[in-house]
Image: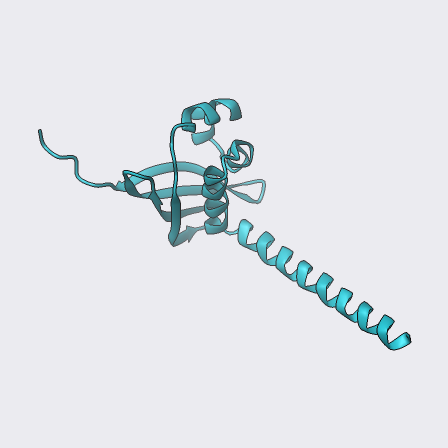
Length: 136
């Protein structure tokens, strides 16, 4: 009986340790600029405007104004998937490249981040590459 109890406690302890390790990894990942960009676009895929808006800072936040306006303006945009690319950091600013795949359009964007109260937040989006527009 004692061996079973000890075995169960060991398994429970290992499960808790694994959850804490994963939580620490996710928390560390989200503190890095690339992690914040990943969290933002994952929120976009999941249609979680509240989470996405919380990862923005000025000047981009002031463009949307409110979380509700962000939801309205992006409601028709169907982001299918995204891929995080190169990340460069320079003090309190960073730039992360991300490939955005929509049903009829794939672009490469540069996302500029800055720190706000020690947390990385998105400050700007710039389209770097998109398919050429056909000349009519």
